[in-house]
Image 1: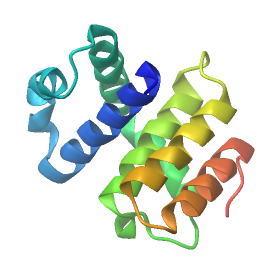
Image 2 (image 1 turned 120 degrees about the vertical axis):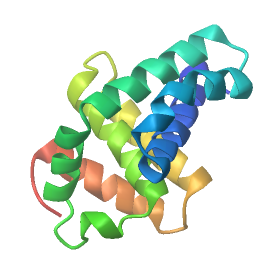
Image 3 (image 1 turned 90 degrees about the vertical axis):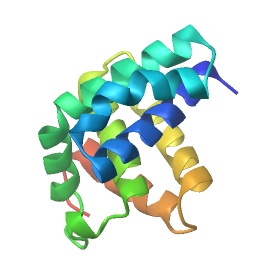
Length: 135
């Protein structure tokens, strides 16, 4: 598996933990990353993306909310929410990552970790975020 893909998986899992258990988990994520992957590059990237997303969570959530008029943000599954938060963070704050890569990786995360309908939903939301329009 690609190292950046693995870092995205860990980041999505960490964001899920933060969403479900609260911000106190942030202090424990270093140990989580060490347990889950031996690769220092993967752990550092996952840590950077997790902290970056969490620090910009309000902006990410606003963009997601603005792009999901048919869905209430609170009704999103924690897995889909975590995938979307990471992806929106990368679209807005990581100019070195091409948007097409962000979308493709998000869809793959949804296929692997969420429901059958999630890949299309995630794609639609992120497409709307990119276009600045509502779905």
